[in-house]
Structures are given as structure tokens and as C-alpha cells.
Length: 314
Image 1 (cartoon, rainbow, N blue to C red):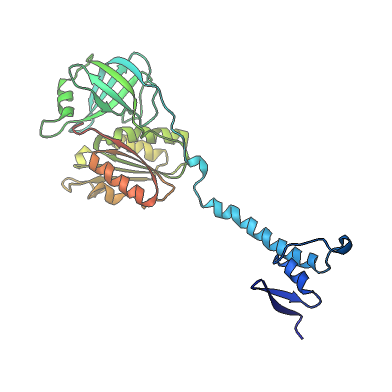
Image 2: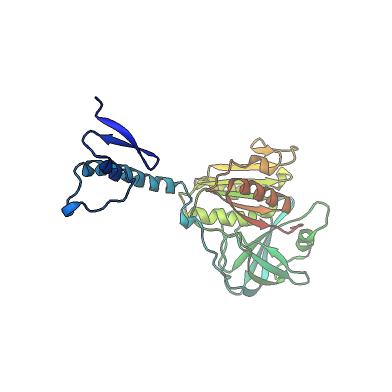
């Protein structure tokens, strides 16, 4: 004869051990609410069955933290900190050619401007309309606290704001600066740091990468840098510095195959992005088409993307 049998209570099957009454079995399985017995006495078999149910409940509780662990930690959602806009005046103190069409312009200001890496500023060179630029470091990683370093590109056709500025600027040229502006600045913590730069969009990306190597040396960084022509990949000293500090995944890309060194990959920049993860933090800087394409790719995977749009012609 079997030691257990089944009965149906309220439409649900309940296992009953030999010697248990139907009431005891229903109480043990929670089919009906418990009530005090006559004289306050409990029911004999209930403790044995209740212990089994409690054990099962404990196993369910232990599985909850594991399920919660797959969700992004709350600390990844960093609140934006409003930064007061500051105004400074200064002069151009250095103009250096970085490549055939890229120039490094250093502006020395009267007093340090509080900025996060990746922030932009509104710059007014005397006799020119205001333009938004991203302060960075020299390609060798140096900069003084009272200096703002900018990268400007001259178009080959001889037109564009960058071309006009480089032709007109000279040392002691007066400058007015207001900032910070933009929301593409560096935030510490939270997954891989995927940095994407097109042409002079490398300026803010370089400042972000440089800061991250000091602030978060263990954080994984992936850097993808592109230019229409391989001769415009002016940032090689900066890339060498990043490699020396442990950044191993650096990809350089050029649309044109002519005079392309072996280490420079062909094709569009977005074709060489890594497979993005939902925990990645992406910073992209460059022209509108590049920034837009990377934003779409990041959105499809749930990665957080901080775009920095570089004005056309600079």
C-alpha cells in the first residue's frame, strides 16, 4: 500500500501522507487558513510538512539577488551636474601644424576655466563669429591650467571656417571664451569606455581618454579613430601614449585606400566598431553623419551614448 495519496481541495491536488487527516494536509499546503485547535493544541504532522515548505521558500529567496545582478547597477545612472557658465578672455599663443590639413591652436586665458574632459566652449576669435570648440590636450599630452588647446582642420578646397581661421590667426590674436557647453563630457565608472572620433573630433575624445587612464586605470577602453584620408590621422603621438599606458584596442580607419599604411583599416568608421553591449558607455565626436550613425548603433543595444557634434568646416 502506498504511503502517500492525493485528494482535491478547492480544485487543487494535495499530497497526503499516511496518518494525516485531510484537514492537516490542506493546512500544510496552504489550501485553507490555519485556526487554533481545541485547547490551543497544534496538529501533529503539520510541523514536518511546514518545514519542507519553508525550505522551498528559502531557496526562492536565495535566487532573487542573482536575478537582480543582471540588471545595470544603480550607480551607472549618474545625475547630471549643472556647471555654471564662465567667461574668460585671452590671446592666441601658439599655432602648430599637426598634419597637412590640421592645426593645433593654443589660447592662453586670464584665469583657469573649470571644465570636464569632453566639454565644449563657445569661442569668439576677434573679427569672427562665435564657434563651438572642444578644449583638449596637445597631442603629446601636455597642457597648462590656463591654456585651452584646440584642433582646427583646413579643408582642401580652401573654404570653411577652419580654413579662414588658420589663415587669419596669429599670436596675440584676442579671444573671448564662454563655457562649458555640451553634455558629452566624461563620467567615471560603468562598463567599457568606447571612444569614437572622426577627424578633429579626436580633440574631445583625446581629453576623455587621457583623463580616464589616470582616474580609472583598470577600466577597459576601446578607441576607434577615422579620417577621410590617412594623411589626416594626425593623432599618432596621442595613440602611442595610450598604447604605452595599456590601451590595446585602438583602431585607425580611412575611407580612402590611397597611401594607406597597413595598420590603417579601409572603409567607413562605423564598420569597425566593436559589438556594443548594454553596459557600454560610448562617446562619439565628429561630423553629423558619424555621430548619428553611432547613436543609432548604441540605441539598438541599449548602450549609453554621449555625442559631441563638431561644427562643419573645423
